[in-house]
Length: 186
Image (tube, rainbow, N blue to C red; front, side, top):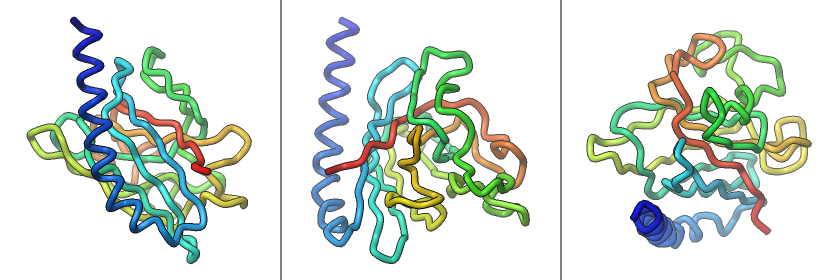
């Protein structure tokens, strides 16, 4: 029965992602590079799909049409390794630290920051299903110093709590509750 429930949940997430991807695909037409990240919770269940693309100007967009998470505010960051193992202790520790090729301190409001992988908090409604969208100019999907596609790749990680945007190393954002490896699209 558990396998059937997991399969049903995956089909629902996939259907919602495909529907959301239609409008995302229209916005991605002018992208110079694109990627995706299937987001998994700590039990290995897929809970959403991130569409990531870079404009010619260098601005990177991240959009998740539908994701299933506990309601509330959560920190979301790019991490330095393309590896998401939920069974590790602590969960998803294989993703490494926040992506920080410039050696900055953590937080969008930190005068000595931010990490390249720092992003605004996301808010999930009490129903537990929400959408996520933000942009960043601190990472790229093209070759260079801040490329998410460096030698060990990158992942997108969602934390249990809000990021205070100042405190090192992760803004007191709590445990890692979701993770997806950032993979280039052809």
